[in-house]
Length: 275
Image (cartoon, rainbow, N blue to C red; front, side):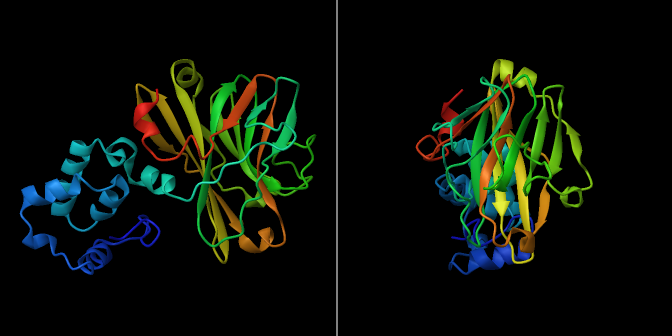
């Protein structure tokens, strides 16, 4: 069965998906619809998302199976499931010796205890917003970034996003020409935080020439929803050579985030269970 690591949804065509699926030795045209629905209801949501691209008829079967299985494809969409399927990394904050980064003691910048692995495959990590009553900056930075330097300042290589309590998010970088043209987007999270949960999902996609760094948001108020912010960083991979990068956060009084660890995110059932 094809996986998200072998087929990228943003680039896959229906014909390629169909060819990949038929290589498994099964021809879906020879199987009765009710049998397909029973088979598909037993599959993981991520594989269901792949099969949605085989044909319109298969997409119909997949969506019916998704509804039967209570699938994340229905809840979060294909892009959300694709990001969540990336290999997961977890860490604590250097200096704080915990997974909570808080501005309770005043403004500071913290780096993750785990350097971002140098590997050719994509990866993700997740931060839950605990409080957003002041400026919060999140992203990645060279490990030499000082605790008194703001993430995105020119003092050291860093890339990320500023979340403003007044209701917008802005892409930031240590070099202005490395910020995408669309720099700011409206994003009102205060009401969500009052009644639910906000989780930031960082998605790093290393490539030979350009490394893509994305941020998505999972929100929970009665049900989980996925939002792709469409404010990615396109980083020349040559600018990352020789640098040790770490997850980074700048917090002020009234802002706090905590790292979701691998024991919390053991599988994706928590998306359905917690609330």
